[in-house]
Amino acid sequence: MHLSGPPISGRSAEELVPLFRALSRQIRRTGLLSIEDIVETRIDDEFMKEGLRLIVDGEPPAMVREILQVRIRKIHKNEPRLTFIAAAITALGEGRSPERVEERCQLHLQESSPP
Image (cartoon, rainbow, N blue to C red; front, side, top):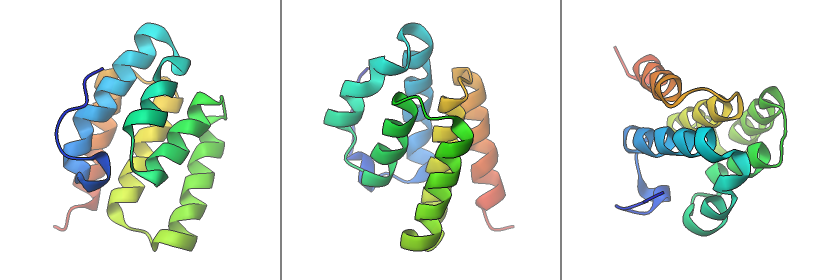
């Protein structure tokens, strides 16, 4: 999987959509464990890394969502980018297709945008 562009931690939620679609495609083709090296060596966002590690380790998506939501509330003060990341990681953990992961990302972006 090719990760070009700015560091993951510096990307906006909109810029992360292709990454989550690509991760979903990789997981679909070769399984969750196939992204372990990517998570450890290419993901520099600690919140995202934690969530992805949880799904790679086989934690149920509901538990991953709960853990990430607690982190957001306690540490990050409900930053919209982090709630987006939590929703995308949960979709990956649920085994959603790349199209459904992208759709969930886009819906989350629409919901969090000001009217």
